[in-house]
Structure formats: C-alpha cells, structure tokens
Length: 428
Image 1 (tube, rainbow, N blue to C red):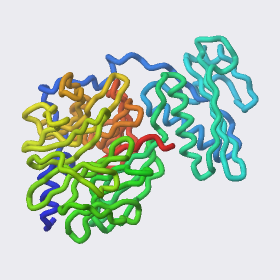
Image 2 (image 1 turned 90 degrees about the vertical axis):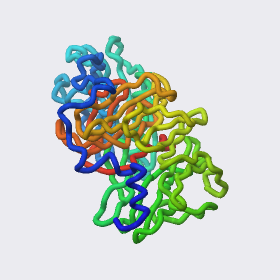
Image 3 (image 1 turned 60 degrees about the vertical axis):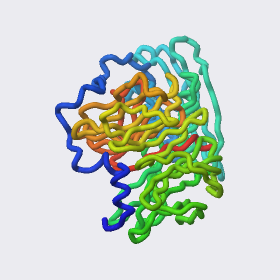
C-alpha cells in the first residue's frame, strides 16, 4: 500500500479488526462480561417441522429449501429433520394428521407449495399450531412473484411464517453487502440473507470500501483506482456521484427512508462526517473529530460514528463504547427488546461483539473466545446480527448470523470473509 488513502484506512480502523494478527486467545478479557456459549441458559425454542412434500418441479424444491433454511437461521425454532416426520409419502392432497406430528414432538408445522406459471410462480404456505387438534391450518397465505424472483418469493414466505407465529415479520427478503479481496483489488459483493446467490458488484480491479444501500436499493460505495483518493460511486458500473465537497470518501451511510446520506470524508489530513440529501448535492458538516469515520443512521434521527484514538463509538456526540477498548463498526438494531447499538471491540488479541442501549448502558457481550468477530450488521426485523468471524471452532471462519436474544445459536451463512458488512431493508 503506497498511497496516503490506504494509510488513512488503517488509521481509521476500517481494516483494523481483521487479519492474521487477531489470533484466537484462550484467555478473553472478562471486564466486558461473559457470554453463554453453549446455550444452556436460553429457553428451548419451539420445535418446527416443514412437511417434506414430494415436489412437482424446481420452484417447488427451491421454495421448500429456502423457507426451511430461513426458519433455521432465524434462531426462533428448532427445525426438525425430514427423517423425524411421520410415515409418508406426503403429497399436496395428503391431509395433515396433527396427532401424528405431535407424537413426533412437533409444535409448529409448515407446508409450502409452489406452482410455476408462464412467467410467474405462485406460492402458498400453511401453518398448523399443533397445540390444537384442528386439521385446518391456523394461518394460510399466497404469493405470486415473477419467475426470476423465485428466491425472493420464498424468503417472503418465511418472513410471513415468522410474523404469523411471533407477531413480528421476518427480514429474510433482503440482502447483505460487503467488500472482499479479489486479486490485487477489493470488490463489493451482494448476497441473499441466507448466504446464497453471491454476486460481485462493481469493478474487481479497483479498491472498494463501505458499501451502503441507497435510493431504490442501489448500492453506493467508495472506490479508489490506482491507489488514488476514494470517490463516491454507485451501482455495478461504479457510476461516479459528484460531491460538493473535496476529499477522499471513507464511509457511506443512508437512513432507513433512503432520503439522507452521511459521508466520512478526509481532506488535508482532517476527517469530517457530512450529512445531507440522498443525492449528496447539498451537504453540511455534522461531525469534526479526530479520525471520524463509519457513520450510521438509527431510528428517531439518531446517528452513530467512530472517532478518537483509541477509537470509540459515539451516538449523537456521546461516547457509548467502554473506555480502554478500541471499538468500531456500530450498527443500530431495533430489536424486540428495544433499540440497541451493536459494535466490535478489541479484546486482547481477539475482537468481540457487544451490544448496549443507545446511551451506552446495559452492555451485553455477544461473542467470546471465538477469534476475531467484526463488522456487525443488523437484520431488518432487528432480531439477527450478521458478522464476520475468524473462529476455528464449529464450521470455522466465515460469515455468521446470530439471534441477538440467543447468541449461542449463531450459524454460518458461508465461508465468505470480508469487511464493511451492511444489511438492506426488506425488498418490496
């Protein structure tokens, strides 16, 4: 790295919590508290089964696989294996026998079917609450979606099941964005919320940082060509966005409505966070602090960022991360338990995720003694946090997702490793 732009990235901590220097530590710092890593203190989730129907085509198979995986990843249920089902075979016209499923210990039963039309797919989901002996489903819903969006439709089915059972819709009809090394460059990648359908975005020869979902769900990011300053661009073709201010863009964020943008910009050795309309045509200085970076919007007009040395997380000007720990990458989670801020802290040679309220109170440790865990991103429904981990245990390093209310139920989405993780809102 021979450019001042790359030196600034390291100084701001954009890459400081990943890499081989963060080897797994057998003695984690306990001053952040401890986390139950075996799930012993968590209430057991309800046991859910997806009826293993004999499928009638690719859409049918895809819908069942996607819905099943989403419900597993949600952390809300213990999804049973198909081998635990009562004696089949199960056809669409096969009536549901609630007692047979209850005898298998199942509390909730889900059946998904998909019919391919000329240009669309029709999906239907039925849910039985097996505490009742009724043979009719307690919940039914149908969807119709273009064939090219069959995966999105299946995610919507899973979100509807979560809403029917928990009263809060799921957030799986969404995407994750992050950056990862590709040869000598660093590219933006998009992936479905279940870890599938990974797609490169933008040129692989440049160096991209800080992707964020902007207006019309288009991805904006900062990109550097030939070690030059980072410029704000958007979309797969890295279309340049003209800014009314000079400097190198190192951080990008949009509010939930996608009507306002925040940019971290370094100019003449001074970093500032600017705020303005989503088109970035009119910007005002919001924060001017040493090494100010990683802006992120929250509900009720709140904004978080990172600044200082060692870096700390600030919300609306107040430091909320614990003193003495290098902190980075805050994200707001409007969770069922209230508004939380989740961020990464350096702990010895490792890095862990912690959560606090927006005033910095009630700190909760989400990971412990599992390598470096970094770049958290909260799901649209506020129940899940995605993050990168270098852990050697379980399925090893990669992209993980965990329920905030039950960190022990973390699951790996895939082997992807990267930085600057962001989670979009639900795709309409």
